[in-house]
Length: 335
Image 1 (cartoon, rainbow, N blue to C red):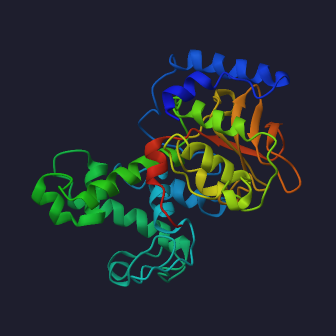
Image 2: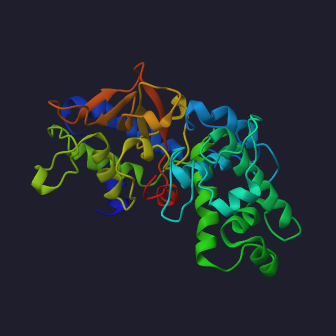
C-alpha cells in the first residue's frame, strides 16, 4: 500500500464502536499542517529519561564543555557507540561507554571524577573524556569553513587533517553519513523546544495496526505466517511502520530513539507511546503502542490478550516518539 492510499483509507473504522477514535485521527491530521516546523535549534536540554539516570548529570554537565557540543549531541554519540553500556567492547578493541581505543584513551582520557585514576571502563571518566575529546577536535578544526559541530564530528570520524584539507566535512561517504547520523540522533535525545512535525507515514502505520485488531498476542511475534500472523508489542509497531517504508529496531527501548519526543499534550496519531517501570531510563522501557488520538493507543498488550485499543494515561506512561525516516535510519543496528 502506498502512503497516499494509507492517508485516504485511515478513516475507515475498525468497528462501529471505534468510530470516535478515527474521527479524532482525521481531525488531528487536518490541523497538523499548521504546526510549527521541527525542533528548535540552539542550546539543547535532554528529553525525559532519554539518558539513563545514572549518567544524566554527567552528560548534562560535560555536554556543555564547549560550543561545538551540547548534552543531546553527546548523548547521541554515547548511544551510537555503546547504547550506554559501560562494559561494551568492540572487535576493534574499543572500550567502555564511549568506545575509546587504547591509543586514543592514552592521549585523551582524563580523570573526570578526580579520584586519581583514568579508567576507560568508568563512565565518570569516560563521559568527560568523550566531551573533552570532542572539544579538542573542535579546536583543531576551528578555522575550517562550515558548521563547527559538523566539522568536529567529521574530524572524529576522518581525522582533523581531512577536515582542514577539504575546508569542512570531507567528501567521504562514511564521514558524511556519520555526521548526518549523529546530528539526526541528537533530535531523539533533545527536549523539543517547539512542536515537531507530524509524520506523513503515521496514518499508514495506524491503518496497518487497525487491521490487526483482535489478533492474539505472541511473545517475540513478528506477524509472520509461521507465527500465525501474531505479534508482541514492538513487533506490531515495527511491522506497522515497515508497511510504509520505515524500518524500526526490533525492541521498544531502541524504537524510542527513532525521532523527537512530543509532550503529552502535543501527541498526534501515529506517535509511538512508551511505558516503563523506571521513568528515568529509556533503556528500561518495556512496552510500546501506536497512539490514535483521544488518549488511546493500539497495542499488543500481553500474553493471553489480543491487539486492542487501550488508554495511555497510566502511571507507567514514559513518553512518546514521533517517528521520522531519518531518525529510524540513524539508529545503530546493534547497541
